[in-house]
Structures are given as C-alpha cells and as structure tokens.
Amino acid sequence: MRVVRGVNLAYRDATGSDPYVVVRMGNQKLKTSVKKNNVNPVWNEDLTLTVSNPLQQVKLKVYDKDTFSRDDKMGDAEIDIEPFVEAVRMNYSDIPDGTIVKTVYPNRQNCLADESSIIWRDGQVAQDIIIRLRNVESGELELQLQWISIPGAPGL
Image (cartoon, rainbow, N blue to C red; front, side, top):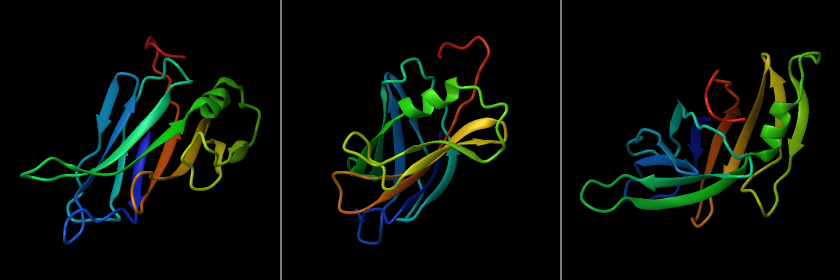
C-alpha cells in the first residue's frame, strides 16, 4: 500500500497538525513518517502488509504528533480489500494495459469518498483509493494498492 497524501486534514494545534498514519491489518502495524505542520501532507510512502485473510479489514488511523502530550486523533477509516484480492486472483495477461477490471463503489462497509477502479496496469493489479476519514471534522487520504507476490512468503 502506498500512502500518497492527506487532504484537508483537521487542525489539532494552533498552526496546523503534524500528521502521521498508522495502518493495521490483523496483528500487523505500520506507520508513515510525521509531516511537520501540514494539513495537506504528501507522504508517498510504501507500506507492505502480508495478506493471509482477504476478509480482514485494513484499518487506518491518522494522528497528530505531540511532543509533551499524547498524540491527538485526526480520524480513522477502514478498507475492504476483498474486491482487490479477488481481482488479483484472476488472470489478466491477455488484456490491454490500463483496463478497468472492477469498480468499487462507496457503501456503509467502506470509507470510500468516491468510486474506485481496480486496474490492470504495467502487468499488475492496482487500485487508487480516496478514503474519507471518520470521527473527525474533515480529512481524506489518498492511497494506492498494489499486489506484490513474494516467493515463499505466507499469504494468498
């Protein structure tokens, strides 16, 4: 998963926020770097999760880094990766680059801000996602999912 950027994140300090993203799936926990004083941060950071159960949600939480107190919550979201994993299991070697193989629509089970297309791109299945953060006054995250097969690794 690439955490691309945050858009219009909430202010948690007088001059803005120092956001970072925590990604969890099962017992895996990964974090982005902290972006100082920025409510529209660009991370472009790749975080690699092992997928052993495609029904498991990917949970994201955004925090504001504080030096002298507990980090402030800046919203959370969940992603259903089952449609993406289903697309990965198909064989698309015969289709043209850039073909949309599936479209996922916002619903009550996901935090999508808009429809999201799963695309066959550069010989791989990829998905660009914009998620709307919950439990906060504003904020979205832009993400990119891409499947990486690691020989001998546990997973699908």
